Length: 247
Image (cartoon, rainbow, N blue to C red; front, side):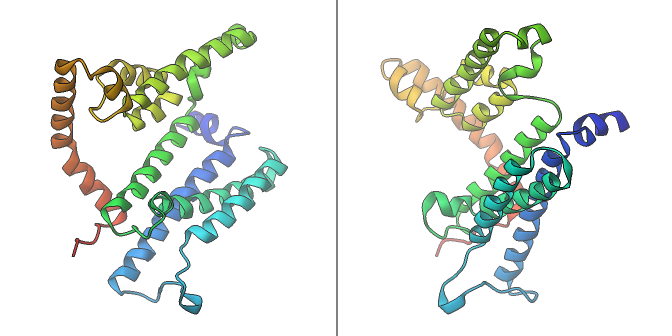
């Protein structure tokens, strides 16, 4: 356990990433706790509305992310400065992605069904950073031997081939699989091989004259959504709060 902590967290160069991830998760959880209390009318917290204008927390989040990002570039990956910038950046990123749905829809959809996107993107981001923190590098570069890494051609070919799986999975409408495929190429390969989602660009292009493939894709999506939709929504509600019922 101690060796794992040193190799993946304390080892020089990885501590800032760990601090950024930790502050990102804590920032999101604290923000959601406060917003849920405001929504319920409990506690001392209130919306910030100077002059009647609601200031969303994405605004200070952008400021903190900018400061932390530029500070990290200037300070490098080592030293106290890098650690402080990592915390600032992670805190700001938590505030920004907590309102990702608002940015996406350009509307205050925080407590609507569309607002679930914010919770999903935060969980996905935290999971991807955790995978990188534990030793996985994008496009399977960490699986290459030292001799292979010295060859620019082999590195480029490895990145292109593994990136191709993620691109195909993305066109098949499998966004989560495509993102995880960037750091775990096998996941992207599985997504690229399996059937596309019915409304994806891949299905519209290649399934138009293949009614059997289109029907299989629709059945698979129906079974998948019927099995996972309810537990996924329950988890999202537990993490971020249930959306407000439609009037």
